[in-house]
Image (cartoon, rainbow, N blue to C red; front, side, top):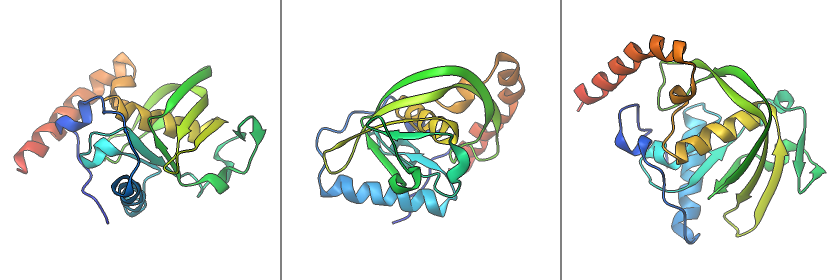
Amino acid sequence: MILDIKQYGEPVLRRKCDPVEEVDTDIRNFTQDLIDTMIDAEGIGLAAPQVGVDMRIAVVDVAHDPECVSFFKVAGEDANMVDFMPLIFINPELELSGPREADSEGCLSIQEIRAKVKRPTIVKAKLPQIDGSVLEIETDGLLARAIQHEVDHLNGILFTDRVSTTAKARLKRQLKDLGNTKWERR
């Protein structure tokens, strides 16, 4: 089922999400709905709060661009990233390292805006899965950036919060207009 993607100004996008206590049929169905919604919106990631659900669940899929990472490891061993897409994670834990690099980001919840965001280049992640297992990955590139972006959503952080002070000043008016437009549509 395709879900409604919440837009900038919705309070759920600013809440730190509650952890998932138990994976049941409803959670499994919801993760599939997240994947379907992400694909329908032509995104590479989607987090539960973006569809109005206050839970620490997100999905990422960068299989369309297998060259977007220079390495991908599972449990310390080289692996084929495409075999693990779409990546579903519940209550993720991240360890960030490497130099911070700026790259352009956008968001399905802030559709009209893109901005450069500096993020650490390498992610080590413990990603609990819907089957109860824990996937331990290490990667870089677009996948590392997408994972960080989606985990930010689970913590009530938007990519616009992470731009430089100068970029924030430039974005302020655009964001204000988006927030006003959202409330006018009600």
